Image (tube, rainbow, N blue to C red; front, top):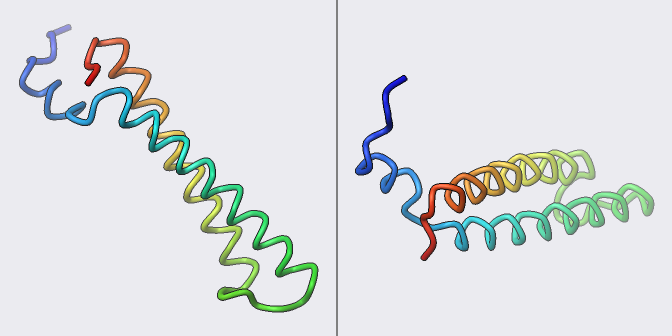
Length: 83
């Protein structure tokens, strides 16, 4: 299997492992916030900005973003792209 060129690696991981780890933390907090607002909105039968279903969909999307950030951070740290 061919080795990935170093220029391409820099382009893929130009943020560095710490950046993606911070983004994972932010996306995790965003997930919990969306879940809590969705649960409170559903329990009180009121719309807090969006419908409860929309809050749950936003939480799911932010979970996927957090997982992507964690995977990118892991591989950037493994390859030695610390900033």
